[in-house]
Length: 227
Ligand code: TMP
Image (cartoon, rainbow, N blue to C red; front, side, top):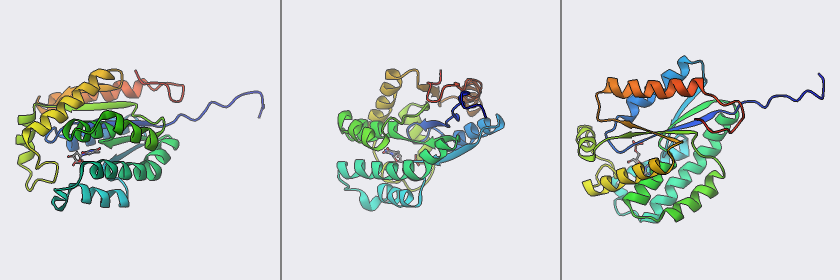
């Protein structure tokens, strides 16, 4: 090999996150998004937060379980980031390094929305943990499924016994939704907001467009932002 010919760096994978309040239809649409990327020949890993690792799933059980109803706000925040640190170290970073495309059901925007908007933790405190846990890593693209709170809760309510977050009341979810929308307007280049109150076929039409654009628009420079 000619040593003067520089090797093109291996393309790193991409981190795509899916966000929204309860009842937006994340599970169905997550599978749909993954199938579009797979159809384009990409190596896709679907995962979730809190969770995604054996220890992370145990932390999830602590966070969502009703025995934790009186959990302190800081405990909740730190457990979210403990699960995230484990997930990043064991699953997300290795997958990205292996050029896989990771679709994560919730990530740090959920912390800003739920612990920040919902519980009232200052964003500066969340940002400290984000910087510590993630260094420079941020999602390449975030799809926010947006829905009026009353409609989301009506849909989610049909699912049986509520977990510790689902048991929260309307004003909590109004603050969560507002925090999500505020983040989306602060970072419009990263977020795609999809109206999840539409019929599923229309939601998936929008998602198909977003995913297909993404597949055709892979930047050549590693780390270059997606348009
Ligand atoms: P879900 O993954 O089934 O939607 O539920 C996870 C719950 O955890 C959901 O109510 C949102 C909450 N959550 C936070 O409060 N902060 C976070 O950082 C994450 C990832 C989730």
